[in-house]
Length: 94
Image (cartoon, rainbow, N blue to C red; front, side):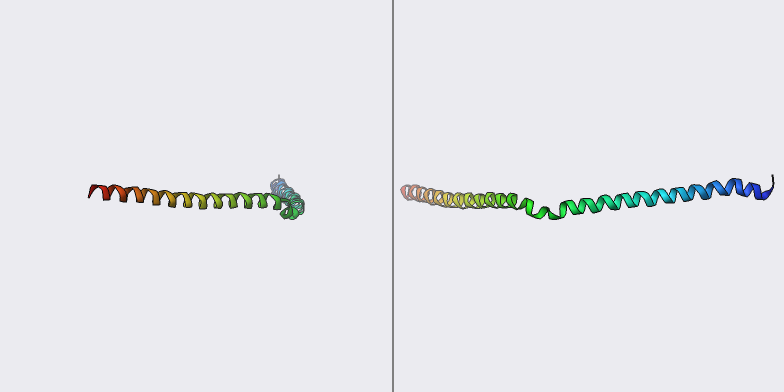
């Protein structure tokens, strides 16, 4: 076996395998790009789909704000009653 035959026997399969691997990588890249384009096209118009959900959450947030205001008012009233009772007790002890 001559050196040229040895180079061809070793080098040719390496080159063919590298070319096949390159083609496989390019094919997978093209498939992923097409998938990404389809995904982007499908979900780009989704902003309008969630407007109803956003409005419902805005309503829930408003209810929480209202409940917080009610709790503050009740707590303020409770503090006034408690303060009045403590003042009454302190005055009775004097």
